[in-house]
Amino acid sequence: MQDKMLKLSNGKKIVLPCRMFQPTDLKRMEIDFVENGILFNRTDPGQDFPAVLNKTKSKMAVLNYCDFSTTPFSEQKLKESTEKQIHSEDCDFVILPIFKGETAHQTRLKIKHAEEIRLLTDKNIILEIPYNSELNSQELANASGAFDILALHYGVHYGHFKQLACVIKRLVEIRQLPINKKIFCMAVPLKFAGDSVEDVYYMPLFGLISDGWVKNWKRGRGPQKIKLTDQRDLRCKTYTGWLETGHMPNEILMIVGRTVYELFNDPDKLIRSEYEILIADEILSEIRDLNEVTFEKYVYTKFHAKYVGLVIRTYTENMIARMFRWSEVFSRFSAEEKRLLESEVRRAGTPSNVFGLIAYLTQCVVAENIMSVPVLIQKLKARNGGPTTLTSTNP
Amino acid sequence: MAQILKQLGNRERVFTICKDYSLNPSLLTQILPAMARGYNNTTIAQKLGVHRVTVQRYTEALRKMKESEFKFIFAYLAKGVQNAR
Image (tube, rainbow over all chains, first blue to last red):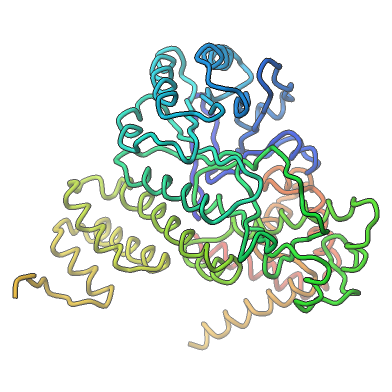
């Protein structure tokens, strides 16, 4: 996906889609900051936020997150939390976090509170809602003036198809609304179940479908058997699984400079945990480097088949929203004209074809200055391999 | 046609070299320009948001590479950047 910049109200810039790093992530990576990234500085209710280094603050946007996910809703606690964030010089956002078992009514109260604090601060406001919130998307659209970024809270350490489909449904629904808001996914898993719970896939897909994400901070039980991610097929397999998929016991894994056998039989787990951190780097960079043309092949070959359709569809929706619906180039067209053009673009099907068609459309409008919608549709049809003349639907 | 085949051949060779040294071409594409600018491993890691040890592994692999291989990869990536512009 092409990088985009999000400029915050205080002038800091963030490269999107962005992974939010926790202080422990930075420590493990042996660096103090990630340029133009977000620091996810979490704390529990009633505790102070961990101190942030000045050099980290200067290079990253800081999100101070008070974790109320195990606390029942309380307006008082919400107000105290937001007030702290408004007056703090250490954070660049004001987030209204989710509470335990948050209902639609409670989210409405949060929105009302966000409207109030909008008048008190210039900081970017993030509204966090549960991924399965019963709040109507249209209600969110109506209240969109109250927040700048919408965050969907996933909150699991191991993903399943059904939940992900629910998250994606909400994500696509919001993308379809006439509001141009960035969407973050919070507390997301990186591993998903394939054919069964035992069949684990390492699929950090949130960089492809949302504008920002943070890994779930709560730790799961972990697998009972030792499993490691294989970069070839992104599957987390046992030692036997590695051998079954063509690896040899004496094969050296250059990432850690150890053999497959040594890695699985490491008694103090240190090399294995280092391997997992380094392999995550490789996979995340690979995914970050994907573009509209290379994305599809990667997803088809690496992700589990049942997730492919969901991911491709969401990626295409994001692309249409970013390159067409909210693009300056097409702002001269009316909503109805845009709808007609969009339905023609959608016929292209695959992400690379949609990308090609939007690029062609942009060229027609910018370089050739064609503003007639019937002409543009005709051109799109010709490009798409369909009939080139406008035909009536009547027999 | 001949030019396309040549480009494909070059791409194939870059991928083979990367495979020999267990390098990820997409990460290499990001690390090499930063390295050429003279940044140290920590700065590159901070710019790309990756582990410092990952950058170290890439820079060490690039140092160990045969000169012909390094020159080939560098020229290939430089050309890619030019085309992108």
